Length: 267
Ligand code: 1GP
Figure 1 (cartoon, rainbow, N blue to C red):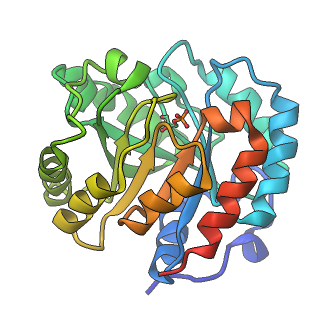
Figure 2 (cartoon, rainbow, N blue to C red):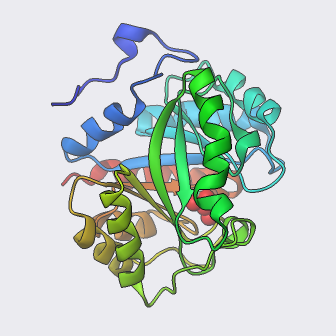
């Protein structure tokens, strides 16, 4: 049903080459039994972007599957464009992970079209999306319908998004949100502990959510993942993809460890 080869042979490398095909490409890998690894670049953080690009170039052959770009605070499309331009030489899908309408750029390959389901403010559930949708259409961006569920610590995403984080000992609440997302037609569920979370979402929590949604919803888990062991725990319990942001900024060599752990896991 899905294409199983990366599209680089037909579309060439560089900016825009993955446009319109990102979800199907990632889904095809999942269908083959692969697990996925994403890096998050938050333009707000004072990272050495040239160094980041070099690291990403090293990580792609090791199995890095996508780069997410976004953050909860003070991110503009200009900041995002600077990163996208530098990333254009790297043949990997570049996906926007916007904290607001300001984080949308026409130069990305796709956007996680996020609804923060457990926000108490309708703006973060559907208001920002209403503002962003015409812009996304104008830019011709692939929108990947994504349920964003904040868990535990929550971090800046939880605070800014007025979330009521799901307690870590109540995975059935996240499972109910995820099932609601599936019934509303969303293709991806992103379980977010918050960037820099003191602990990642436990495997048992992920397992409960996976059991509720079945196999056809892509589950991404992020926040507080700092080791191959943590990535393995989350992936072996039903996540399709893990995201690391802080680790990439603070200890990139650990990202290589995570990439090799992720790629060793095949269902
Ligand atoms: C944040 O899930 C991501 O949105 C990544 O979190 O920075 O803790 O890796 P970390």
